[in-house]
Image 1: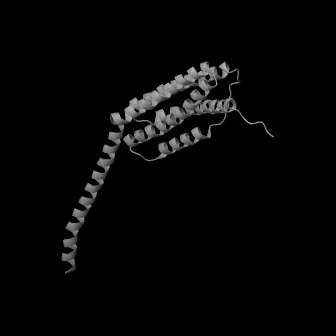
Image 2: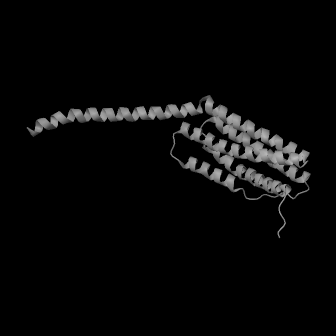
Image 3: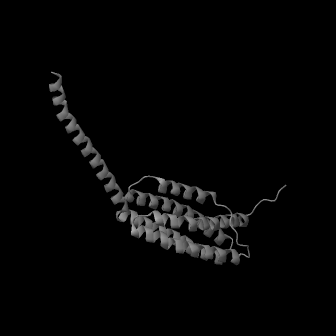
Length: 196
């Protein structure tokens, strides 16, 4: 009979997953920053990129505190979330809507990370890996702060700008239909008169 895995094994697996997820983010965040049209959102992505690099270093410290080799395991979850984010950047949205969608994509990332780090902190604590737990808690706190910053940007105007842009577009379309209808109405009597 094969030996069953332990919580420590699961913890290391999750740690490797988180390490790979952060590495993937260091490639995705510059693309998100470049796509952002809001200077404040762009700066938030650039700032979080620096924070992510620090989180990678912190994960390396966690591996060291456990006398484990630093290595990642491909994180399918993060790969999927990043792929969805790429899809958003390929859509033909107005600038404000693109920024709102970039925030939504980034918040999916943050929520995924908060779940992962919350689990890692809890498991580290119950196994007595206090140094690892403290380091992971620091990252969890940063992820929560990043999520709050994104919420603040969304609620602080970006979502409203996107809604206003959509409303303006609808009004312009309706105005165009009304003008076309009036032109069509003016041409109709003239056409009837020619037929007589």
